[in-house]
Figure 1 (cartoon, rainbow, N blue to C red):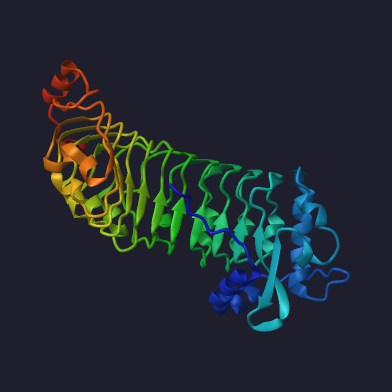
Figure 2: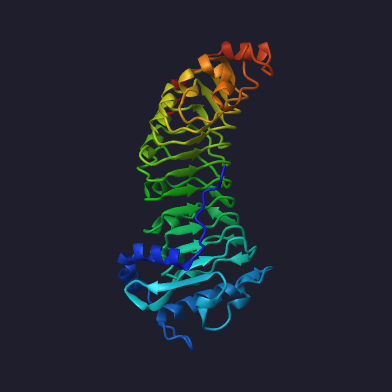
Length: 374
């Protein structure tokens, strides 16, 4: 599946984002002034940017591709990876509006001085070796629209500083070493995308997921455990992709998943989910990919899912299903890519042994016993 990202490619895109957030520039300027002056830089906003970038350069310990070799002198808009744009309230005034160091392989950490870059709309640091914790001064970046810190070595608890960014729409923290619980306020923010996969996050998915506006939420490859809360239904108006693979989920899949009427991708594979497939999933008319593999589901694969109009990939291998209703037994005829191995389907090859299947039949699942809705 293609990764969800917004690469920065042109200054024009930065200018567009700045124009969308121009209504908060005045407040930002008033709150975050800096009195230092830099020789050769008359623009006070670029003075602050120079101070911040030079402080950052001092704590970069490895730059094998020489990205920061141009970070010399007062012309910060000419630094590699730094994007300037006109200040919306004064188009003659340039500001540092974007930083894109994606795939630079830089090692270092983020200094407190980055809080001086309060004109930033974009901060993309994907695929580097930045480490440590995020400085609290990032809360000064009140115009920040996109924050991509993925594929680095950041540590510590979930960085609550990101919750204080009022303009943030895109948050990507995947492939780091963040640990501990997810804060419930994360799911009340007006975000378009939330990527927290491949960290060390624990506890459980918050029971009150708020009223999120996200279209993509990826929890995969963490250590949550517990149930998927029924409040997942609060994502109904926007959510298109929900990836929960390998998160330690247990209990039954709540029927509220079927309320996510815009959903295109649902992946709950490699967990400990049990019981039957919720009948409500048969109402997801936009669903294209459904992955239930490597769980403990049992019962029947309902025909209502197999006839979904846009379904193209249905994986339910390594479970305990005992029957495929109707066309579900011949998905090839519908052009659907599927995998039904290692179940308890009597007419299909590569299934579980009778002993394994009988053991599940003797202990039917009571979803209420998991107390997932409480």
